[in-house]
Amino acid sequence: RTINVNEDMFKLTNKLGHKLSGNWYYSASTELSTQFLNNYKSTSDSIRKAMFLSPLRFNMNIGVDYKYKKLFSLQISPLSYKYILMSLSHPNLNPNLYGIEAGKQHLSEVGSSFTAQLAWQPTREIKVDSNLKFFTNYSKVEVDWEIISNFTINRFLSTRLSLNPRYDNTPIGETARMQFKELLSFGFSYRLLN
Image (cartoon, rainbow, N blue to C red; front, side):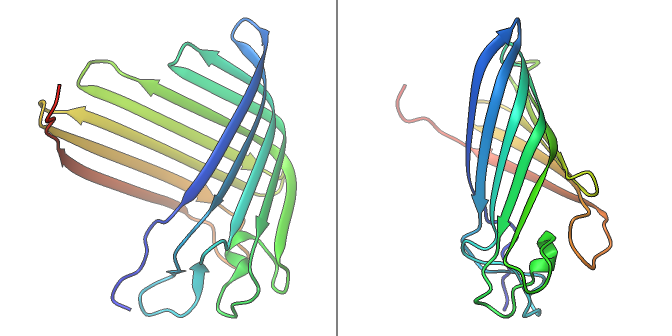
């Protein structure tokens, strides 16, 4: 192969809240995510990391949510459920990458989590969105932090800087390391109608 998929994600999220007091809400959220395309460890490797609907991840969180205007949200979930389903029909798909033992098709865990979201716009030209997710089953952890900064240069040009540190020690047989992804992009836009 000359091309390998870097990131391919389909995600559905849902969040329901009921006011508790002040800025606090009872909260329940769900997230369903999967991939569409075949994803390999490298262009010369035959071991697949992911394929269509495999893995299929489902997360459910129940707890409280603190909201400050449209600027900040913190959802604390003492009761969280994580479910991962893998297809065993393909022999080169490695379930150990997702914490699933060999020969098994799914992973079902109960733990705790929190999600912190920030949407900050200090000026008209600068906007920062941050999303920090943490899940633990009390023996292993997953931490995913995405920071996206949008800069408007003028009415035609804009740029975006995305930083994504991640730590996950759930894979079986692999040494956990801090992962870091960054993306810098430039955009051009022109509006035909006002």
